[in-house]
Image (cartoon, rainbow, N blue to C red; front, side, top):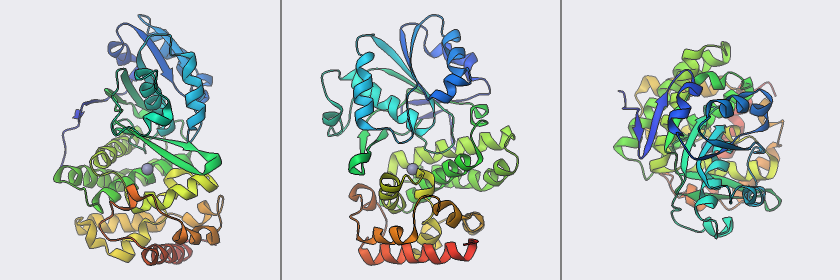
Length: 365
Ligand SMILES: [Zn+2]
C-alpha cells in the first residue's frame, strides 16, 4: 500500500535534504514575509533564508509563540500590510504555519478583521504560501485550516480555506527538536490518523493516507526517540505527519481532539499530549476493529501507545481530577460530531475513566 506523494489538493509536496537550495525557485521575484519563531533567528537559519532569497525583499516576523493568540496576530500584521507581500514563507512547527495562514488571510483581505474572517466559511488566499515544517506533527503544511487561541477566554478558533501552495519537507530541520516535542508532535500525527479512521467523513482516499501514516509512525517513532540523529527515520516520521494531515484535511478530527482543547486552553497541556492520552481508551471502549486496520498494524498501534508513560507527562500540567471534569464540559461540536459513535456524557466519562485506568497500569505513578 503506497500513495502518490507529490501533490495533495493544490499543494505541491517536495521531499529534500537541503531546503535552502530549492527555496529561491519558489520565490523568484516580489516581496516575502518570513514567519518563524525566535529560535530560528538565533540559530542563524533566518539569516540564511534572507541570503538565499536575493531576488526578493524579505521581511521577517519571528514572534510566533506556541498556540498563537488571535489578538497578537491581528496586531502584528499591521506592520506588513503596506509592504505588498507576494509570498509568505512559514518556517517552523504547527503554530508558525498556522500563524502564517492567518497572516495570508489578513494580507488577502486587508479591510476585514480576523474576527470576521473566522466567521467566513472558506477564506480565499491571494498570497503564495510556502510551508517548511520543522516538526513532524500537525500536518499544517497540507491542511486547509489554522487554529488560533484566545487564552483569557480559554477559547480556540479555526480559520478555514488557507492552504499552502508548496510544502517543503526537509528532515534535517527536525533535528533540533527536543525529545519530548518530537514525541508530542508524532502523537498528534498518530491522533490525526486514528481520528480520521473513526470518522463519519472518511473516504477511500483518507483511509489510505491514514493507514500509511500509522504504518510509518509505528515503524519510525521509537527509532527516532532512540537515535534522534537518524535522518532516514526522521524523514519517515515527517512523511507520516504530512499523510495524517492529508487524511484530516478530508475528514477533520473527532473525539480525541474535542477532548483536548479544554486541556490546552485551560492548562497549557501540549496539543500532541492532550489529543493522544485518550487514544488507548477509545480503542478499548469502542473496539480496535472499528479502525478496520490489518491485525498486525492494530497490534503495533496498541503496543506503541502502551509503551508511553502518559501519566508522568500529564501530571506536569494537570491533575486527574481536572481531566475527569471534562465529562461535564461541552465538547467542540464541529469535532465531536465527526466521531463514528454518538457522543454523550456517559461515553466521555467512560473514556476518561478507562484512560486513567490504562495509564495507571503503565505509569510509575
Ligand atoms: Zn492535532
